[in-house]
Length: 406
Image 1 (cartoon, rainbow, N blue to C red):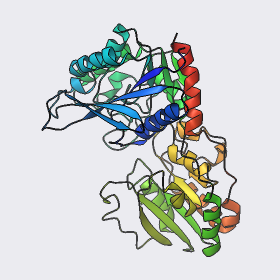
Image 2 (cartoon, helix red, strand yellow; image 1 turned 90 degrees about the horizontal axis):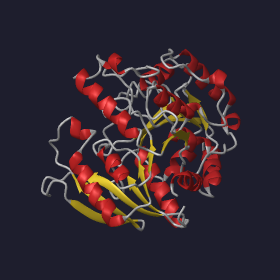
Image 3 (cartoon, one colour; image 1 turned 60 degrees about the vertical axis):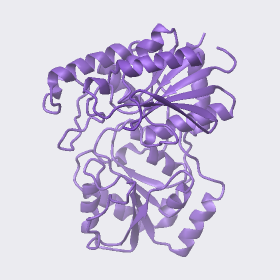
């Protein structure tokens, strides 16, 4: 491997236009690679501005990283959302100009897989990092229109008829993405669960490795903040980040709390929307305890939120690929009550007998809530659990690069 390789990172969003957990991972790992002088990084991402020429390129720079933003028109065909030769042509020109040593592909919904073909033709090694189920599911998260987890394992495209508008088009997409993924040198997954499911479904079998996501670690004063809050108010405080959707388990949480025989606790609901609309219209006044909606947090004020809770409720009703908030909580000694939700359980603090089954009624969640209330803050104040930091994730990526860059 060259001493300081040049990585061309591709993700649908990137700073200054950040959105979604996978974008945070892509940005933070890129920042650590640059800061640690492990690699030079350039980025390709998208914008969609009608006042600009379609497929024109703007260049911005954030964190010392050049970001080449391709302007895509809004009215694109179904196929262009997963296989766009116009973007492929732009990326081909960028590869010729930038001469990268590696293309690292993250979330490319709306970018499409033609970029893999052009990288292959240019003899640029390719690493694909899978963050969700876009490669095997048209709906990206294997959640059906009725907000129920699909539960196919492995995914058989013929069984997707009830979810997709055009099964023939979905089959063409499925095959195109599988063919394109086979061009990669390595495919990374954030969990063993995600790797097993995707490879069993035909996605680049044998090319996969588990590359666990990092998280923002607590600051040095976190423990003091946490202790001060608990000293000021000894009540147990529960936290929920998932929003008021069935697939994230809100209905299960509401039912579990509704008939609790006590109210000596608090609940903090994070509003992750950009406009503060998530919890609008939700009547929380009839639920026991003190309920409060708090604004979305960023990594700079993440500690303030976690210092204000004792138990994180993670009641996802689908099999996720990772579970970022769980790791953030565990790194800060926050107790987690969670479902058996795929890659979210692959951490050192998991207790298999306490995992709540997806689809289960509110009884087991209510039991664990009452248990936490009975034992108080002293019992739920766990020691921080060792989880991967973004720096450690970047360092481990260096080992992946060494296998593909000659």
